[in-house]
Length: 267
Ligand code: SIN
Ligand code: NI
Image 1 (cartoon, rainbow, N blue to C red):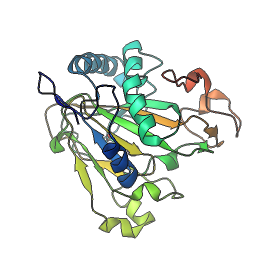
Image 2 (image 1 turned 60 degrees about the vertical axis):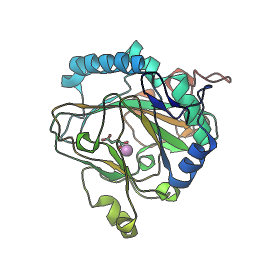
Image 3 (image 1 turned 90 degrees about the horizontal axis):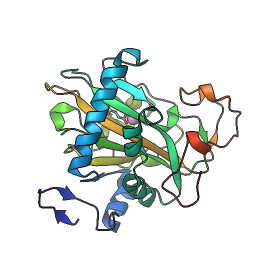
């Protein structure tokens, strides 16, 4: 940790933009970690304004607005400012440090819990939803664009569950579903992580997690970038991101749709 800036902004990044070994070790032990100050204050202001404008323009066409959250998938190809956030080299660098392998973008999504939505995102793992094969690791950067205390819908994790592979997809509208799949998880300690605007958590795609309800007057804006193993291939199962692409099972998920623009090895 490098401490605070003149604006008392705490960051877990060093002067070169990397996290220290303790952060990497915490991530590998628990399957999630908080990284404070991944965005500069001026970036938060800019990205939050872009997210609000995008939500206002696209809320009505959103295919999955429900009580849990308004979800806008793959914003980055449609909004050049949000693209800077999704493809941010500082965030990608930390993601690759934690994963320990080259990554590319799977997709982003803006997850907005509207004021007083009063509905939790229930416990689930992410990876069982995805049509991925031959992948060694995948993880999400969940970036807070507003302060997200407990009351506004911050995330809760089940440490150690990143090692539980092979479960069926779980219903994030059903608070019992993950515990039906594995009843022992009900007795695991849970870790709830409030974030200041500009902080983020990284979680492995197998780590069990949920988000609390928003019980405040302000919307909860989270921007989530999902990174996958750069060598991931298509598993052939349906998914909203891959369905329009005409892929065959075994095709590589790469190129412009799944870029690694920050990297040295290209797309
Ligand atoms: C949420 O922010 O409501 C859920 C995020 C996630 O499932 O990754
Ligand atoms: Ni999730």
